[in-house]
Image 1 (cartoon, helix red, strand yellow):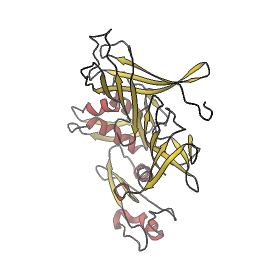
Image 2 (cartoon, one colour; image 1 turned 120 degrees about the vertical axis):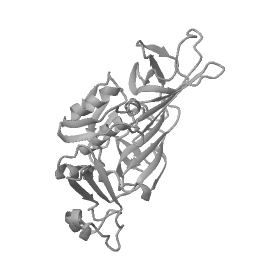
Image 3 (tube, one colour; image 1 turned 60 degrees about the horizontal axis):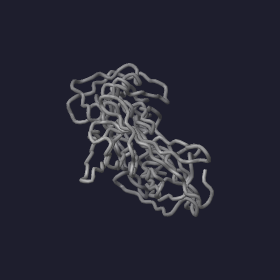
Image 4 (spheres, rainbow, N blue to C red; image 1 turned 90 degrees about the horizontal axis):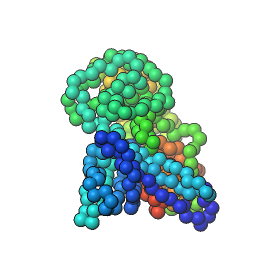
Length: 356
């Protein structure tokens, strides 16, 4: 929407949604969103609200919800970019009356609502996820971008911290799905994003990329993943079988992996070696389902993490799981966005974390 040298005209709109109902518009001094695949709550908000002398009794304390959006002027119209719905978790107020709010998207609410008794996951996977989510967030609306699958009867244990979210995540992982709140505040269930397909947007050297770099951490890398159910009846394995991949296990290991359940695996010389990871999941009902879950878990583990700062392509729609074309090196690479830190007023660059 902008030509070279133009600065976007932006406004941030925030609405308080009190626990008892209603909606109260709030003035905003500054706003920032941090979205990350590494959080249970995908989105986190920091919002500064100036003193409200006309509403001296207005409560902005923790526990209420706040809805935020960014609008950009395009000609005679304003184009809206939703920025999420958040539970306020911290709300300090200084001597001048200015509120500094921290909010987290509703996955946080589900994580806090531990199960009080054991539950059985069986039948429709989507119905089970909806039941678990709505038990913590009664007004939640669940949109599914996947086809439903049946679950094998599995007990999800109560009591431990995060037990409800653990049940949600384990069932979703067993199906190869992700569960999250989008920037409209809607709960979504969809396939895990892979590094393939047409990019959603681009980061280009000399145009939208200020700086970039890449690094690998052994702490985040696996090239062998085994998934099994908690009773160990079903078993599936995935290995990095791509010749040329930096974490390739080697041709012999690929062949031996077919009998790894009974014989194990040994590393081959002059390869990356074996970085193996075993995961026990609820909701696994067959070897085929366990293998699919293992392939899905492996897809994001043998990856290069890159850090980018973007200026001219600032855009508030950027979100986790966007597929980017990164043209800062030769050849250009596809990458999935794992994290973004964006000033909602449009004043600064965006910091991106991606995996290729």
